[in-house]
Each structure stands twice: as structure tokens, then as C-alpha cells.
Amino acid sequence: MRLPPLLWFLSLTSASPTLLSRRQQSPFLSTSQGFHIYVLPSPSPNGTPSEPLQLAGLHIGAAIERATLQPLSFTAPPSEYSLNITFYQNATYPDSAVARDVLPLGYPMSLYLNESHNNDDDNDMPILKEVEISVAGQTKGLEVRVVDGIPQVVYGAGAEGGGTGKWIACREEKGGYAAVKFGSWEGLEKTDMCEEVVLVAGCASLTRLPQGALGSHKFVVEVPCLEGLAE
Image (cartoon, rainbow, N blue to C red):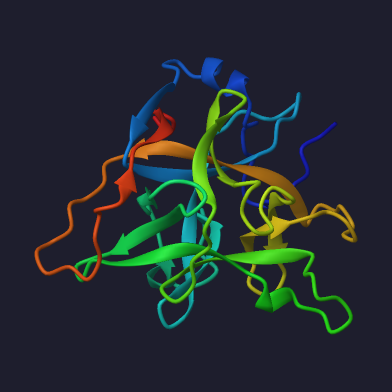
């Protein structure tokens, strides 16, 4: 079984416990309030080892970004991307949400599973939801949880619509980038354009908000994460 070339500019390592033994200094499980999100293919016995790639945001509108894979080459000006994003989890499941701060104003933008882009007149349930980083939208039920020994961002089974889909990365032909989505393979043709992925939490320092910030870290919780994942 070969790893589909969904990301035409890179090869990603398998997100399995073997990831921990493939590095000179193995990452180890720890906890942190801040974390980076790394996108890796779902476990594959023949996954090609390489460096994990961070989740990035591509600006698509006022205070809204599309979740993409951090590009090695930019199809849009680099200024249109948010890179090296530190996320955090607010509160606990089932009301938990994953967010980031926009500095220096210190207001939050949250991960949001947007159904509107995929609605079909003949089908009220979209096959895939666009993953966005948004000021206006927030999806509750997102949390970091250890699955098969790896801390992953999951959409909890108790949340509305949660637990019934998978994270999927798809190459966007028009934009030339890889967008992250959530949903079901049902009704989709599995091609080299899309591949199931997992979102792995790598430990990161959470920057303290400046005085007078529009947001708050009052309800931020410690989450499991991998220390040294990208080293």
C-alpha cells in the first residue's frame, strides 16, 4: 500500500506509535496549555518518515481563515498565511473549543467546522465540512485526547455531529493548497486528491495576553501533547 501523493510537495510520516522510535530523540508525552497542531496521514504500515507539517491558516475573509497545511512553497503571498500558530483548549468537553489568539489585540479565533460551503439542495447533510479558524464561528466538542498513545485533536462523540466523521486533507485545484476538512468518505471517491489524516498536538508555550486584551485565558486547560515532536 503506497502513501497517496495528496500533498504534491511533500511526504508525511505515519501518525502511529512508530513515529516515536524513528527519531534520534523520541518525542514524549507531556502536558501544556499551548500546542501546535501537526497534520499527519492516518496510520499506514509503509508510511514514509519525514518531518510533520503544522496546521496553518489561509486568509479568506475578514477575521476568517481556512485551515490548510503549512506550505513549503506559497501559492498565495506569505502575508496571507498565519504560520506557527499556537492553539489552546478552552474549558472541558462537551463545551470545549480549540482557539488561538490574534496579537497584539489579543482576541480569539476558534476552530470552526463550517457546513455552509458544502450544502447541497438535495441533501441537508454535507459530506465534508470546511475547517476554518474564525472569530464569528466556534465548534464545541473539539478537544485534545490521547488516542492509541498519541495526543490528537478529536471531535467528541457526545457533540452534535461529533464522532461520526474523520479529518481529511484535500488538494484544492483552484488554490493549489491542501485544505483540512471533517466528514465522511461516504459518497466520495477516494483519490490522490484526498487522504484521511490525524491532527496531533505538539507542546508549545502559550503567550500571556497583554493588558487590555479582548480575550481571556481564564478557562484554558492543560492538554496532553508531544514534547519535541518537530525537533
